[in-house]
Image (tube, rainbow, N blue to C red; front, side, top):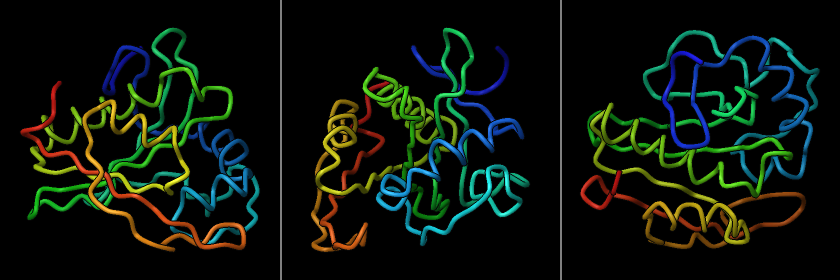
Length: 179
């Protein structure tokens, strides 16, 4: 196990080519889950396709995408990203998507903690935000466990599987964060 950012249960590392078809199959092919967690329109895609959103090219200034692997055995467990990184306002957003077999095991909380460490300590951010549908109770619990506060509900802000859903905005400031 080398490189990346490590928590108690997970390590966040750069995406490698072998991760792409697994993430495409287990995350993108879950249409109902993908449309609820993504801001882009779902389209069918072959696992590992060149157009895959899971494929990483060069490092980006506005996003820091990671593969999530378990500390115990270095198994791919999902994807995480600090996105819309704004160096002027010193803010960013968190995205997290665990493979189905790794949900409900406490990994999400550890991922968010590690992303906060990266954002606040490494990047020097002042604010990190999470947006999620109001019925995503698992993500809301994770965010609140880490110290995020509910700030707003956007009515009918998400179109998913034939209906509009409300989403909640949760925020955390550097001074509120406890490493």
